[in-house]
Length: 105
Image 1 (spheres, rainbow, N blue to C red):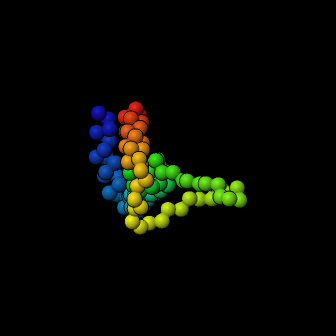
Image 2 (image 1 turned 30 degrees about the vertical axis):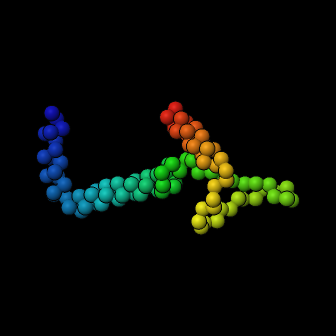
Image 3 (image 1 turned 180 degrees about the vertical axis):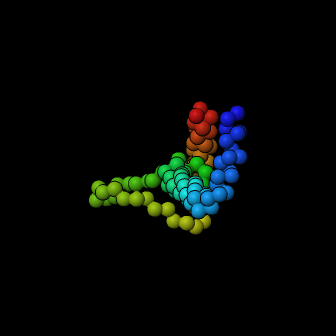
């Protein structure tokens, strides 16, 4: 109840001192803007760094070359090669495992 009585008094006082009012409002706006900017950067870089669905399922493939060193496996874009015999069965089995894993989460 006391707050409701103090509110009109506060507004009147802010109207009497425009310099203080301007400084308070600008400080308040800068604080909100800075907080929003910081949390937007944190969200974009730490919480959700990749702009597409299922980013947690991305993998990096490496293989041992003939010299015994690890190297990144590169995939070339272009038309898909013909599937190897039985590849569709393996893909169906792999997709089934993925669906069961997603349901269990």
